[in-house]
Length: 155
Image (cartoon, rainbow, N blue to C red; front, side, top):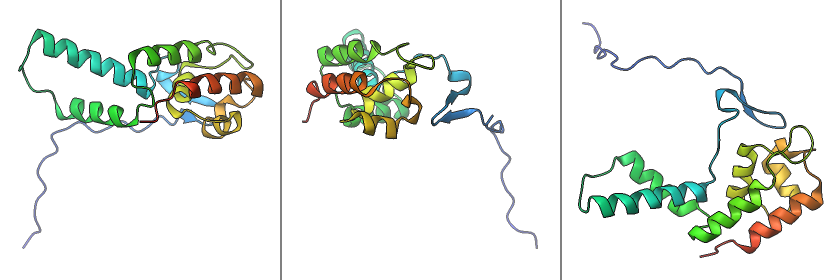
């Protein structure tokens, strides 16, 4: 007697990972290399505005997908900056770093990581975001981190 049979696969096979994505001391993001990035707080702001717009245009309308709802819940929990004005200020502070420094300067990915992680010291930022090593001096990076820290929401 033969064992149980497997149902036919209905989805396409995933392509193997290209192996060119790496967020270490040398930042390689593959095809996403020059793509704009959002911090968790910016994503929270974006999804909140979309929800408000949807509620105004179609109150009691269609239900959102599980992925959308779980994503909104996730960014609501982990966003360090929840006020719209504060998110904008953090974006301005962190965007000032784009292109600054050695080795091509700070990238959009690194900017989003700095705004999301809210590091206390330049050393901590370089530990968590190794690709920052050698791009900015400690004083510049610490100044930006201090400015963002003043805006943090500890609720």
